[in-house]
Image (cartoon, rainbow, N blue to C red; front, side, top):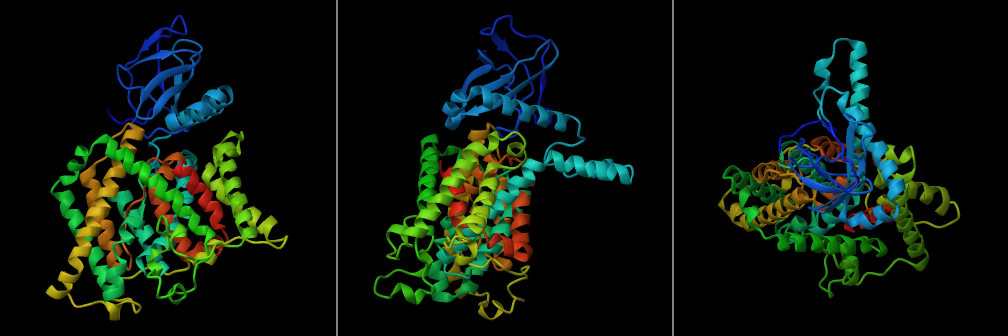
Length: 510
């Protein structure tokens, strides 16, 4: 179970026949298993090898593709085959093996020749001069390219979700966008699970609208701060271990339920969003904060977009799904760019290079909400919120405490369950107590700097994992790029069609 950056095992023997059992005593890599990393067997594990495929069944792994050593002493390269893609791997075994073997070989060579592991940012301590500084920087960028690109992909996909969850809570969209990067950076650096992504979430957002409507956004900020303090106390008391008592079927049901919720919620893009709450009508009992609810497309009574736009949106989704399926097979680009990021880029090019020039259009991020914003400052010094901050007294505490404890409990439950699920998928172990501390710190700072809080998002965490991001660097990059989007890159992000982002989320749901 000791973590090591070595990704290849040098064996001194090989079987005499392809069906002979191999008994390995090898180091065990704690890094999550993706199609771009090398998989090492557990110490003393046993597996049958036949036709360059080691048959296993453990935590979603159905097998391991193998590049057989050609002579004694050569590296044995293995890469995982996930249960969800086992059929595809069997049907396309030869092509996939070649692509995966090339990728894993390059990754192994890069890691073995670099002075620090993937995701480590301390390589510059080895600098001996200007030339070595640039050499180390270039090598670090090459080594961590999958982590950085995965972070960019996650940040792009977080934008429409953060905006939607802001509407759920009944607050300005910039509040949700600020929450996304504040929660992300805190849990990435201080949380208990490398690669897990946090941000504004629907689970937390649905608790807030009543408080915001009755008392104002200032009370919400204090409630989020208090929730963060409660979560940090939970972690300090080491109660995170309690999540280990949750039965496996509960975790499976939780994961499947979230998959359904995330998938159905994508149909919101096909509805015409009212310009203001008054358009919803007072008689139907619906409010603006219902936007983004999982089944809102089928219950909110809004009109569907016209048939032509629906057709072009479906076109974007099909393109995104097709890109996700076939882009990794492209010899050069397939290794350089995550398929999810490629899908977003391609659908954006098609929107502005094909659909709009011929006289049609689909909704873009800007149609949902302009993501432009400023760097946050404490709410007590912010002119937008300072007048709404209530006095800190017993009355205020009595109002915010029920909401705070609910936010803390729901956020911890979703985050720790997500941690458990990713632990099982990657055959590694996160730290629930540290995750609670990281979540609490994120919520505390989120409330202080004008955010609506949040927790771990299983959809974005799975996207990060499938895009090749499994270190703290990837989730830190996601938070950093979200901040860049708010401050600098918003003109480009506003051009992205939301249907392309929905297509990526459908893949995550699957």
